[in-house]
Image (tube, rainbow, N blue to C red; front, top):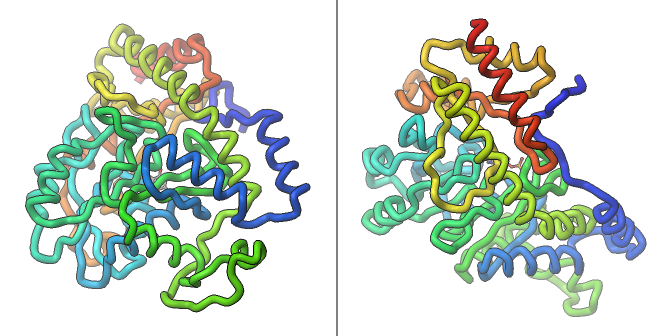
Length: 379
Ligand SMILES: *Cc1c(COP(=O)(O)O)cnc(C)c1O
């Protein structure tokens, strides 16, 4: 289907093609100089000590769970209103995700009060996800973590470039994870990054990313190492130089593109207040610097979200729903003990994600909001 206004769009040009060509001509295709440069630039831009590029965001989350030493019997408090990978990564280690509710229909992030009500002697960590690039209430979450000695992992897949009090989201907790999947604010097709300021966690991540081996092919190629030992049961979560080269170019465009996303978000917000005041726009009072990855709205209670999105589809406008709550998926609720997360369930039912990408023009935003106005009148 060809959309008049798609949900998301890439910002790829001749720079990306040239970067890939350079790698192909270098004849070194897996983790090497370009990956190191990508990691160094990412760490520098985020003012974080260690950054490891990996094969995707889910691999980053798995490594984060390993880095804080999750194992069977541990519980991790996590939102349900997120992509399923957030919770799956916890389960890969044998630990159990425990789902917390969100704050409200205006703040779709995990609720500190709900987190605190779920803490018990098995709780080992809190995994937050900054919905749409808008920061969770990190001061409250860190205070809970300190009180109960819990680790904090950030799923910053939406928040690449977001800031809270001058610091980058993803770099506040013990370990942070980013995704470069093709619909994210910067992309390498598939790809991810994991960051930490903790040297011990970094050493574990470095090992686990490549089979638990003590040296890399690249080190041996350069003559910096000859043999290797295997000291952990690791994985192959390496990225290749082709995707790292895309990442470097995309990283150079990230802040400018995020700025454009914020401008479009403001336009959406003011048009929604003016034309469809019955619609709820979450994060409308947000004061921090958001990567503005998503533009979520909640249709009024009692209005069928699917009817609205079907109408928009007829106008050539693509939308999405972030997210079907994880606790309602079959593999998470089959034990008959479905959690009750009333605010999450209500918001997920009403949520429509509107088109947002840097090349969008103001006129597109007007078209989308006017179409929502028409849809609400007709239904
Ligand atoms: C995209 C995404 C992921 C997973 O990233 P992949 O790179 O697709 O593995 C995890 N969590 C959230 C919130 C995401 O949006």
